[in-house]
Amino acid sequence: MFSKGFTLIEVMIILAVIMILAGISIPSMIRSNITSNEVTTISNLRALHTAFIIYYNDNGKQYPQSFSDMSPYISPALVSGSRSGYLFVYQRIDEDTFTMNANPKRLGRTGTRYFYLDETGIIRHNSSGEASVNDPPTE
Image (cartoon, rainbow, N blue to C red; front, side, top):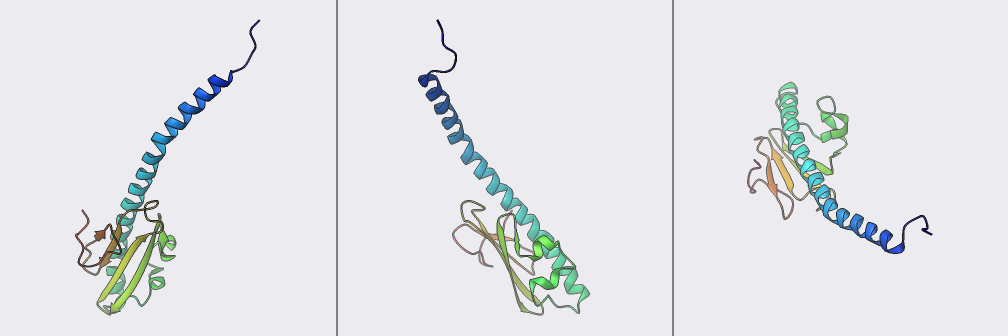
């Protein structure tokens, strides 16, 4: 008398519930991924500053010519210039001055803030474009 299986209405209700749950959880997962990437990038910038200071003291009181010169001092993953959804861009100004920017690979997907670091060790951020010395410090 009764047939086995689900009716079309039951399947549609189940699909609707799954879609609602996905609609609620996916934005939260993206936000938590962005937050995780930004926290990791700030931590990487702090570690990089320490590595730059060690390099400076080990190499005649001068910063490296290029980021690849840092390979004995930092993780190989960081030497590539890309980590946790961010691209790291190093520029040596002179023997005593450098800048480093950390920019999201995909704005809004891997990060929402741009970061800046120089020889002072102060990490700065900007949400609208590449960060610079004029932006507020990151807490």
